[in-house]
Image (cartoon, rainbow, N blue to C red; front, top):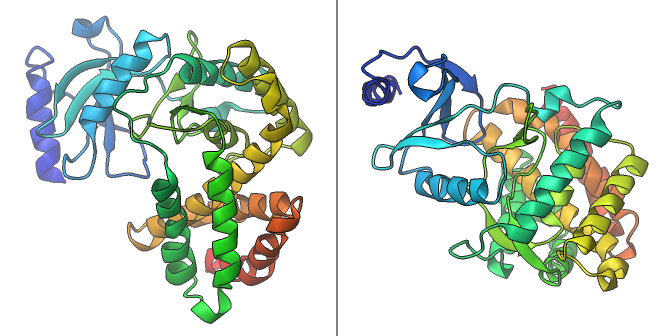
Length: 336
């Protein structure tokens, strides 16, 4: 890591008029990318900058650059790319600040901030890029559900297969995949939540971590936003924001009035697929990457699965399995 940091410094000097940059850690990330904040610099209009170190064998910097340009072209507030070295995995980009939605949201400003985020999401879905993006298809969805099996059930909890109720899980996965594939398909950010949205003075929100975008189900980013793994809200507020999204989506041609009868179930079941995947990712971060802090998000994440699952007869077995078979074990691991 020290060697990469020195290489990054040397590369940056060539783009900062020879200045030796002082690198301050900018944020933690659930990936192999590292972010460094550089102080205000005259050559870039006096604004601070972010240096990105993304090992090319691990991260797709080319995808980030391509999507950043496409999203800025439709008016979304994403970092401007000033310089790039894809072979080394180095980028120099604009700084969207330090005010994550997660730290700024409170009951009195949530309507405004989520309103801004929903507006940006509609822009992404109605005008976002489509060519060249992976298809969020059935194999993709099932691979994600496999993360839950491999890393949470088998890995973190070491739950014997005899206690996993595999027939129930396979029936559930079929239902979740079928619902996802039935939805209109749009450009999907895939991580549109409070840690990747920044509160900005203009063009709010700033949007980060979009390089893994795909073409997929229309409800995916909305449920990522409103049933966030890192912050939760009373269900009546979530429903009001979802209703506001639906009205705007119809107005902008992303959805049609005829989708009203299906949308609530699409939203709910997409959330369960996402939260199972996220629970598996949190377990993987703890076990493989030495990030046990992510285990603290498991109770909220799987809590959504319990709450939503109880509304659908076909999902009650899953909700019961999570409540009775997983949550006590997870509580013990989090406490430990």
